[in-house]
Every structure is written in C-alpha cells, then in structure tokens.
Image (cartoon, rainbow, N blue to C red):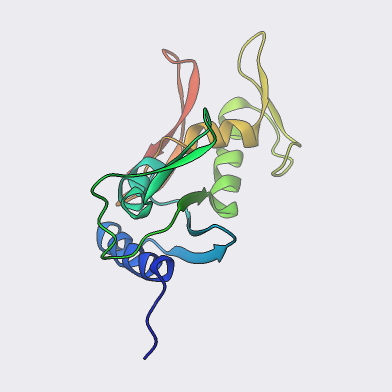
Amino acid sequence: MRELSAHALGAKSLRADLKKAFPGVKFSVTSSSFSMGDSIVVSWDNGPRVAEVEAISDRYQYGDFDGMDDSYNHRRGFDESRGSAKFVQTNRHFSESLREQIGRDLCKVSGVEFEGLGFKTYIKLSETEILAIDTITHRMLYPVSFVGRGYQGVEWDSAGQEYKAILK
C-alpha cells in the first residue's frame, strides 16, 4: 500500500474530524499539490458557520503567509502527524433552495413580488438603502449556524434595522 502525501493525509484526517464535530453535514474535503506547496479545500452547504469549521481546519495548516514581508512563517510546535498543508481554505455555500425560500419570505414580509434569485428583486430597507434579496439573504445567513436547527422564516429586527432568519 502506498503512503499518503502529507496534504492527502491531512484531508483524510480533517474529513474525519469534521464528520465527528458536525454529524449529518456533508463536507467536500480535497487536497492538491502545486509548485512550492500544497493545499486542502473544505466546502459545504448551509451547516455550521465558517468560524466553527475553521476552528478545526486551522489545525491542518502548518504556517501562515505574511504579506508585509512576502514570507511564509511555519508555526512553532506544529504537529504534522495527522497530515498538513501549506494552505487550508474553507468555502461555505448556501443551497439554492434555502436562498429561494428566504427570498420568497423576505418578499412576503416586505410586500414585494418575488421575481427570482439573482439581482432581480430589490427591497427598500430604509430611505437610503435598497438592496437585492440575494445581498440581504447572504447578510442574514453568514452569521447563522444550521447545526441541529432548521430554517423557519424571516423577521424584521427593528432594533438592529435588519432582517433575521428564524431557526428552530
């Protein structure tokens, strides 16, 4: 049996860690190598917040790029026994069905006709702010974790002057 590269082993270990931390969430974890480095990329729909996934995935990146002096600095005491990569990237996506349901709910509570996803439907939030429902949807979803909870609807938060997702 051939030995796995450090980045392939890191992807395998990271996939297992994510499965344990977030059962029921489907993650795509891939690795690749390139000139002068390697990477691991994690993608998923809905599920946990980016920060929750990065708390786990960050353990597999063996250093950090410093743009001030154009250098890569290795982390002291880094444990490479479970694999590692030069760069670990996370990509959270929101499913089209969820975005469409939220778009329809936003339009319903705003009294606006839903004309589809994309930059087709706009909602007036204030005298100076008119936004596409896609922009509002992403603002609502980014800070939300769907782990153990499902989307129930939309409400207007008058104190924060923004729409919020109702989860249960």
